Length: 271
Image 1: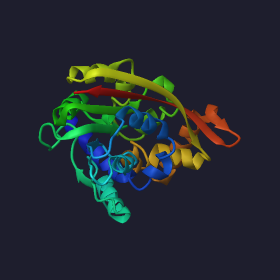
Image 2: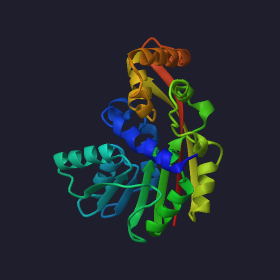
Image 3: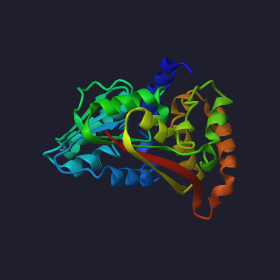
C-alpha cells in the first residue's frame, strides 16, 4: 500500500463526504460513541485530544464533559471537516474547543499534553495505525487514557460490499486495510505494542437503520469512505452502482426501510 496515496485519498475523500456525513451517520454510529465515552470517563477541567474528529460528533460532547475550565483540541486530515467543526464551535459559542488540520501519525503537540486521547472510527483509515497509537501515547500525560473505536470484522458488516462495487468501476484505493483493526484482537494488540497498559476491548453488534434505499445509498456512497471515487461517477454509473449495492443489502430490507448489521470494536488503554 502506498501510504502517501492513501493519505491523499483520505484527505480529499473526506472533504467530499463532509457535507453529508452527519445526515447519514450521526445516529448509526451512536453505539460506538456511547461506549467510547463510557470508557473515557472524561472529567471537568481535563485537556482532551480528538484525533480524526470529522464534523465533531465526539468533539462537542467531549467539550461539554470537560467544561469551560477544560479544553479540547480536534484534528482531522480533511480541511473541510476541520472548517465545518470550527465554524460550528463558533456558532455554538464553545470557546474551549480548537480545531486544526493534522495527520494522525504525526501529532504536532508536546509530550504529556493531554489527559485523554479519543479517536472515533478514524484509525482504520490511517496507513500506519501503530505509529498513530505511539503518537497518542507520547502526547498523553502519565496515567492518561486512550480510547479508540473502529469498525469490526468484515463478515459482521452487512454493507461491506460497497468496496468491491466501487473498485469494479474506478481504481479507488479506498482503504484496503479497512477491516483489519476490527479483526480478532488486532487493535488491542497494537495498543499494547504502542506502550499502553491495562488494555481492554469491547465488541459491539449493532444495526444501521435507514428509512429508504436513497438514504442507504447516500450513506454508503456520498457520506462515507468511497466519496472521492463516487464523485468521479457519471449519472449512469451511479445508477448502476446504487442498484448493485441495494441488491447486496436486500436481505436487510424491512417494511420500514433497512436494518443493516454492523460491528464496532472499542479499545481503551492507559499510559
